Image (cartoon, rainbow, N blue to C red; front, side):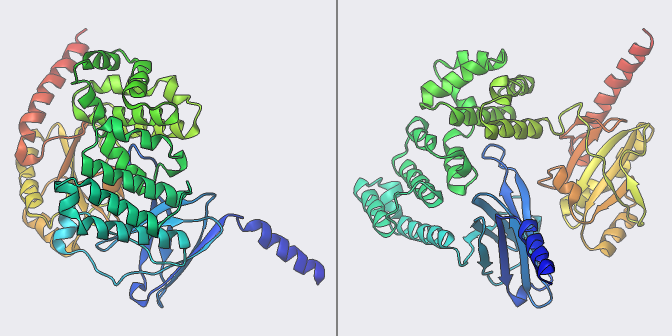
Length: 468
């Protein structure tokens, strides 16, 4: 018996992660719901990854364990809220949830909707401290709003800092110390209109483990948002632009070091941010940005965090670029049959993400009959529908004889995978499911002309190649 008890103890001891954190919540109003908590992957792409989910039983109880080795900032979007939290290793976190408040119909359809942020109430001293600090910070900056942001009063600014230091006197460099320091630097920047060069050194002392905290990400983005585009337009910017063109990563890193007084891993992070934003700016050849990201200075950096962020940025920028393989979509159509978007190998594919509850999508979809008539021989229409009322959706599609393969994205899997922000979103793919246009025109916005011109050139080139 004693041996059995010892064996059971050893199994439990070694099967439970030593750094496992227990997360609990109880609220009857949340019965049957699931909250998914995400973390940021990095400060450059600001992409997210799920860390864990809390599923509530019929009584409104939820409990799970999370295996982590360090403090991580996490958040969950539910209803109109964004609940924020720092989860700690080897702790039992007891979260308190606010009253449920679901999004309105308008909020659900608004691609620019921003949830209301709040810090979860819990038994965590760290989170209580950060929540209290932010509450006091917001109260003071609201109270002295005009004196701070319009009059730029140095005496009022000093008063605010004095009050914050009195109530939160910590000098430690941990999570709270970093949060406090960066929030105060953000305030100083806003009040006195500091230049990027004056703010940047404050970021150099922040440990990479805090690069995905909200205070760092907010200040980092404020300082370096679209900085590559701005810097090449300065008096000596021609050399920087040339460096991008000829893929000179050393020049870019040296530029960061001299202009912003940064070196080491933080300089590499800034360079990645500049390349990321420059890619989307339209000011640089995308091929040049992608080549710079292949530099061994970044891909083989001494810091593993930089290497991972380089991969994250590269993956994001290459996603759905012309010539890349678009993810194959496999879903049930409106008749309940399982279909995939790559089944037809003989035609180009016009891929449309739509929401039939939105009037603009309805009008765009109605025009597909004309496009089908014009390009039936060369084009397959694939409509990926956001899940709405299935009966009303079918009635609309049947009544208006909407052509093409109509797939229902039940859980929004492919809407998320294709990073769809608004409806309709359209792409043009070739017969092999490779991207031709990641931002094809919508049916009523000129797709006929766009595809007609492309098709004419493509058929000419294919005929020319065959005759050689």
